[in-house]
Amino acid sequence: MSNTSSGYPRIGILVVAYNASTTLAKTLDRIPVDFRDKIAEILVLGDASHDDTHLEGQSWAERNHLVKTIVMRHPKNLGYGGNQKAGYKLAIERGLDIIVLLHGDGQYAPEMLPEMVAPLVNGEADAVFGSRMMEKGAARKGGMPLYKLVGNRILTKVENRMLGTNLTEFHSGYRAYSVRALTEIPLQNNTDDFDFDTQIIIQLVHAGKRIVEIPIPTYYGDEICYVNGMRYAKDVIKDVIEYRFASKGFGTSNWVASPDEYAFKDGDGTSHAQLLDMLSAAPPSRVLDVGCSGGRLAEFMRAAGHHVTGIDYIEVPSVRERTDAFHQVDLQYGIPAEVGTGFDVVIAGDIIEHVARPGAALREMQRVLRPGGQVLLSVPNFGHWYPRTRTTFGMFGYDRRGILDDTHLRFFTRSTLRRLVRQSGFDVVEERTTGLPLGVVSEMDGRRLRLLRRVDRGLVKLRPTFFGYQFIMRLTPHAEEAQLVHG
Image (cartoon, rainbow, N blue to C red; front, side):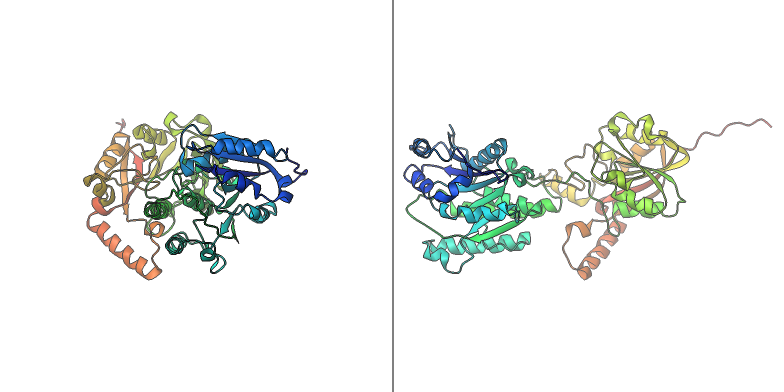
């Protein structure tokens, strides 16, 4: 049993093993004796090995009673990444605080376990990576083949450049994690293959977690390598490219976490900037912000002197501080009485495309307006060249945001939007068109970005239905019919 002292974190060692019957016990024997009382549990996960790996693990556990050792054998092969996912799930379920990934083939030194967990125990990191590249020449001295060394360095350089990191190695399998950090990333959506390790680094970086590297010795013996080097390199590069696209809103990539809060679109020409500009001439007004998300747009409206009530189907943290009033409302079922009526302005910024019955939603907005009130509406243009091109070439698919946002239930062109507005009881009194959100998707410098924006604005003006990214409309209810007045 573990002799972990009170208040000391519960440390687990996850040993992933595949056909490691000749090396597993030797690897476990190398765990420092004076560190074993710090270990709460050793989890040995045999991944449907064809040899006696699990029997060797059971035998070792029976001979070493001071450390609680759990040996499991998967009935089918889960893959390198799948085996890790099973192990981390087990670590979470068993209430561990720190989990160290150790390979059963002995390639990574168990003697370094105290150094691997120290930054986590001291609260200095969320993840610790053992690096074979930190000390110059150490990898080659440890027997790493030259082609692997060169490939490792090239891939690491590419990954650092694309992720904005400065790690000395991305491809070491010696890792220690805060279990809490693992619960905060969608690792269950990761690949089951060998590039799992790359995806988990990307997830940690994306989540802003602290990563510390320590130098570790390199050892290459007669273990069998199951990694296809060229396929692995292709998968790793694909992962970082996929992440870069996902971070800009392209593709869905469910292994990259999405924020709960709908992003505020700042910058010249964006839909939110246009909505604020259309509201700028209005006196202080009662505004209903439909689909307010975290209240970023509401903050600007309140700063301009307006009283803002926000509604959304989820409550994003801090939304109540950014609005004058907030109600959790599912627009699919209408706007409830407690929200109120008599609003001067209803803001529907990028919202009606998210509901199944947009006409009914617009009529609800009209119902809560005061006489003479107006709705400011923004909607993505499905006729834009981007979705048109993807559809034409059979590449239609959803993105994380933008026109093809995977939460959109309806799509609109300018003509279908105008028709919907009229059928819902509104007149269009002002219409604008925005260009591409270049400030969001581009990393160009200021001068080139300004030039590209000028070109884009020119194209939008030339043909708004093809180059327009979003349509912005100011709506008022249809004028009431004239009544006969007897004199």
